[in-house]
Image 1 (cartoon, rainbow, N blue to C red):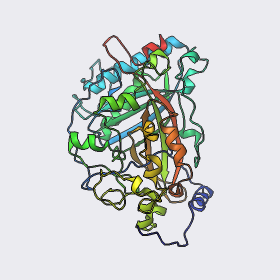
Image 2 (spheres, one colour; image 1 turned 135 degrees about the horizontal axis):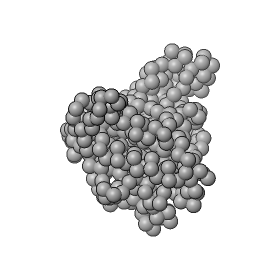
Image 3 (cartoon, rainbow, N blue to C red; image 1 turned 135 degrees about the vertical axis):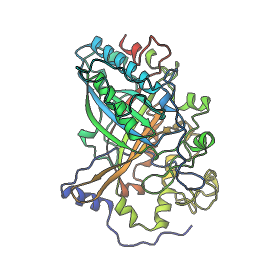
Length: 426
């Protein structure tokens, strides 16, 4: 592999210092495994077939639903309920509304002397649009307000500052996370407003990031299910090539879903740890970087997504034949994130996030990046283990984690008389 020429360039730290020194408003989610990276023909994914996503199941179906639609939104809420009974009422109302939204139930009508029961932006019959909604809870929900301290998942903590972080408290943490995905933005906004309308006395927005849900693909699983090619992140690289196969229940059980023998509270079985990171990408800085250097930083060819020196997006990088990093640098992102060894196989995570664009900051720089979302059976063995390997990677010159949080995705609902989190608040 050709070694990038050493050249004078502005460092990322200098770039960030200038950004912050000019009144920039840094807004979005933080770092982690950025690219598992890739898709076969390099094209834009085909539009997903529209359907209503099933709501009930032992796990929240939005975690693994395919095809991955084209719009996404992360909303974090603070809980205002006065006691555990109030929290239970809020979760029950939230579940009832989500069930109806995902099924496409038409809005109720009532006396026009009263406000309508929905915004009306989807008309009299909401169309099938691959809408899914996933609800998680943060460590702060287990303080002394609701008497739930002894029920907190054992690895759930407030997301700490990790290497390279500059977390904005106005874009971080929260009692409840709700993640929306759908084919169109009006569907996402309709669902958000309906949930907020229904829970206005108990949940208040803390922060929110929306964008288009083509930043993280589902690897071979998505292509087999939909024929879509792997999407690209805003650095221009295919993202999701090496993602877990959501159609393989054994893989999901091993790496994503909390099991009965994990030592977790009984109510948490069937749930999953959720890591959310708003990662700002310094795209103008990246666009001035040589292609050979970009590819060395990621470890893949930009156009095809193939591991450097090889052909085919899904080709194994074959690290044992490149022990000194002559073909794929030892500090390339894909090599650090997933070394593909027997020891690191337990660190695999399911990524499902999206690109975002929040206009521009006070310095006139584009505020764009990746809303990174990862699901795993264990935070310590999953996201945190991967993040530890990525600490100090050269790609840090071009990205900055600015928000997000750790949450626990509630187990699914398995009956019409059940609601999300019912065993938690029972």
